[in-house]
Length: 251
Length: 354
Image (tube, rainbow over all chains, first blue to last red; front, side, top):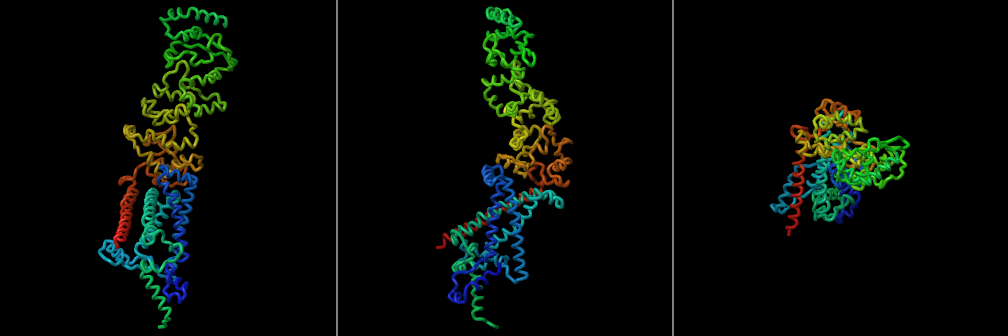
């Protein structure tokens, strides 16, 4: 997560930086790939999972028939779940490794500023203030969604595995956890789907600032205009680093 | 004998009316046609020679009179091939062949049920050449037809004639005991689960996958279940659980599955269903793990706790599940409400910015 603005310095020649860079690299190929993976897996899990929660409805039965039956749908669901769990492990190991051994900064970590930003934004929306807080690489809404996905993902992975192999897990875990897992898995799924359908759909598509779609997670690029508006602090940081580089300060 | 019969028939034709009046004292009255037939067939020694043996063709007027058709039908309404005397030649080898040939007779009036039988397992067997499979008269009788369900236990008795073993199991079950010992007519008899005419092969997937709906006919009937202090949540809780979800989808997929999931009868038994509190009940707590192991041989003794025994989670039953549910019931609206509010405020601010 922490190496993107460095990529941008490599990508853009010093000459371009002087004439004020108009486009920035926001996401590395790795992050673009991870987003694709989580997007596809999430969709597969929803399509094969939600009908199982509403098995008595005609639409769920129709959907499962289209998928080739419940046995196939469950196989897809379980395979996607395993891949989702693998992606989560991969992501966490990668981030931890970057932080611990490669001296990268994890910009997703919530700080006290995020809480002040949330209040500041609310005051701005309510016209109690005319200034919007300035954000760094990720604003509090993006951090909220990231940690929502992370925590929700943990719940889904843990309960999902319990439901996948109840006979195995009850050999060393109490059996009452199985219905608990089932209840949590179903409700957590509905929460995750609701957040994606309401919050992510708005943030990435319907939000007038980015309508019809915020392409930066696919192209990896973001315009200067949006950087100024949405990530002013990050822009300052990047340009300050640039200026240091240009002057080749040696002390 | 043929000349005797001929003579009798002619006498009957000439003196038909006279016979009726003479016999009015001790014999029931019938239409002219029936009387005509009875003039011969009333004779208890009347027999017909078939290659497979001699069969009686006597009809007891009293028995016929007391049957549901006694006042309604003439002989030729069913015996449509016989219109005159002498009767047309027949080529039946034995009584069974004669019975089978009369299979269509009931259709004229009972078209509905006749059509249903064509979809049933019995007709299917018959069509494949198994002449033991019953036709209308085998269950309902012929000249002595009475209401098939008066009393209700008569139905079980009828099926028992061929399905003796099933009957013996059934009368020991919670349903059978109540019917046979207590005369309870709330309990299901054979046809309540298997149907009377369009009897499906109960070993097929399509039949087995409808089991929850079948049991649900009674077990989700609130008034009926209240009478016996039974829960009506059993079907719904089953359908919401893993086994039930599987069954619902397999049923609607309409294709064979080799990944069988338990339906009601897999745990509770079929014809031997016992009361859940009965010490032999396979779903009694003490017996439950053995029942689970029928399909899950590796299940630990603790494993039955993974099943909520048809209870809806509540603070007293499966409290942990109940509180997880309660948590989400508040947490989801709270989170989504907050997010929606945030979005609306954002839109409002943009809309009013100028």
